[in-house]
Amino acid sequence: MQTELRKVKKLNIVIVENFDQMSEHAANMLRNQILTKPDSVLGLATGSTPLGVYRLLAEYHEMGLDFSEITTFNLDEYIGLAADHPASYRYYMEENLFSKVNAAKKNIHIPNGMAPDLEKECERYELSIQNAGGIDIQILGIGTNGHIGFNEPGTEFGTTTHVVDLTESTINDNARFFESRDDVPTQAISMGIKSIMKARNIVLMANGESKADAIVQAVKGPVTTDLPASVLQLHPSVTFVVDKAAASKL
Ligand code: F6R
Image (cartoon, rainbow, N blue to C red; front, side, top):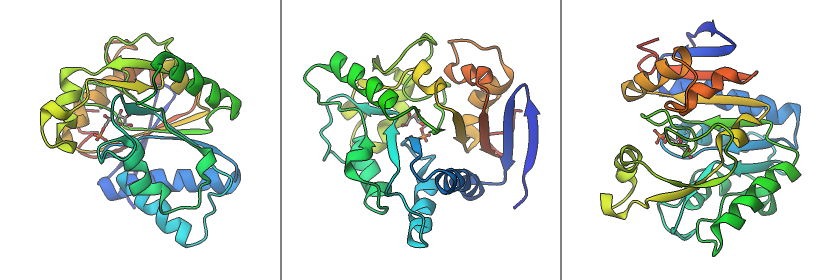
């Protein structure tokens, strides 16, 4: 596998050829984490970017990788979608990972977008991350507008798990997962920037040309709330795993 390593500020940047190599690199980081610490706490993302990682983790499980002591926390969930809605993140996680590995149900955490009191749900979620001892390794994708989780441009860096209004750009980007654009929820619960920054290690993945602008700004631009992923420049242990197209402006 041909990779190119660059160190910009404190960021490790791994540039690979394509989606498959990106997935393999990130999946290996997760596998190493699980092998080193079988009761690791994993921070997980949804969307198109981590699909290859989950496919590989399922394969590694078939080959013996044990998830029985693993705890997981997902970054986010839409508000108003029930767990059995095919576009809900709980459904996505069940389909793509949890039905294929032996993680214990009680150790799987996803914000409840149907909670009657959303503020309480945010507090409960943040507290459960703390009670689990914090996240060992957090997987992130990146929005074309630079969001991480659903922390849209303008989100304060001090935010913990919170209710967010999705931007037009995110609604448009995610409309592909729904029958029509009008079906995309306009709000979500998301871990905040501070919640994400508390993770001991972070792996941000990106592939495709549509992410090139967000990647160059996240890595080389100023640290600004206008581009939420730029905050990662301040984290002590971040790896960007990006394919050539997403790295094309670096
Ligand atoms: C998903 C999430 C989002 C996505 C981002 C990229 O849980 O938090 O930040 O990672 O929107 O989405 P894809 O991978 O579909 O391009």
